[in-house]
Image 1: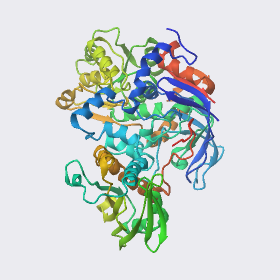
Image 2: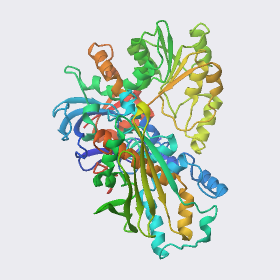
Image 3: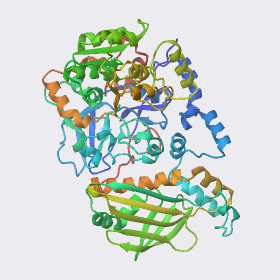
Length: 389
Length: 246
């Protein structure tokens, strides 16, 4: 089959590899119908996250049609059109039973790579470094989905692929980020980042009752999407002297009730702090440029909630004093998509959540490297590239 | 800027080329890591460095110890370095909590030769030779020895001990205890007995307890996955554009 291969830093190519096969009894093979880029992929494409191997198939946000099922697969049937959350989960361990799916204890084939860094291994992910399991990714014609009964969710008839695809990652990640904020009527929620996850977090905050949502970014086309598709107010941080000041004034001096970071380790910013982060990251003194997260911590109202969705490694100048003294609640996780899928599908069917506007650029799988380059450089207003094998 | 066919600029590729070295340790960078190594005389901290180290290891790492043993023609019993700070005989103890499976059931599963074989795969290849006897081998035929089941208490404990002196793993024991409403705790204890000689010492010093301990943890995770889900997570036979996809 054809698949998008990581061959080294900023070296992606579409190559022919062997087809996946059923190895474990709960596996199924999916014929991928659509997959999409994710901002978190850029971290290993750019070389900031280790343990990629040349030859890895990448991609973790996808949907498809079931082609083949393993002997122990009971619910999922051949021919089902399904969407699959990015984290592979068993459904049997304590974490899965407590709906902490991305922390599943039973799906990491290489826990020894992650345990020294995080203390305990997380669930595995498709196509996202060997420290996260080394599973083959989904920018391919076919992908093997372990624990098919737990991780494949049937796409409702009548919802086109573009509407269902983002329920794999961007939508559940954003939805979870808003859920973390325990939003009350009248709340103001600020979201750093108007990419796929940030826009989904903003939409979700409205669905959960926020009175006002403020999206922060620097790209005019993304800010326009936040206003037009989501109904957010927006701040272009390049146009203001201080995001903090603007947020303070927009919230009557209180600060947002909840702040969601949907940016992560390669934040852009302005001023000295950004220059400092960029320099240190370049010489690998630390992995993260954390301006968005720092700003979110300082902006959040006293006793508010900080919800971190961006992917981070190691960061310094982390203002933990502000978190402690302001009594912030910090919530964070990789997405527990399986916990939210029923609600997300219901919202999608009722027309309350339609993420298809994220799919600004469509490519054949053969053109995937170009799709990633466009996505990375945010050319031509690219929010997400989607690939159709 | 000119963009290549794939849309990434040549300059960008060039700039970043240097960083591919950091694939070994991209969190800290090679020069910094080198400094740390020089300063401490070894890789003492687990964490990010451990990750890079472990990435290059696996059963092969234990194989290094085996290679040294073959080269030195067996263990030197009175190695004076053995008692020194530089020589630590790795004793590993790791535990895992397995929810909703009672100790008796876990004991029964571990008593199955196939289970032992599958969960010990991170450490060694285990073959059953009959009568509680098993043959263990490590990486590329570098070490092979017999182990006998010496403690067998249903629902409580199992212990395998090496027969003779020529063994990289002296003994393996597993104990089960109830963990209130959280299931059963399974504790795995492994005593390694790596060979003497400079390479063996360096390997042990470098690895410290980090790597073997991570392997012990991996074995326990495999056991948990097998008893809770009926399968062990794997990257065997998956697609990748390289000869060994794992």
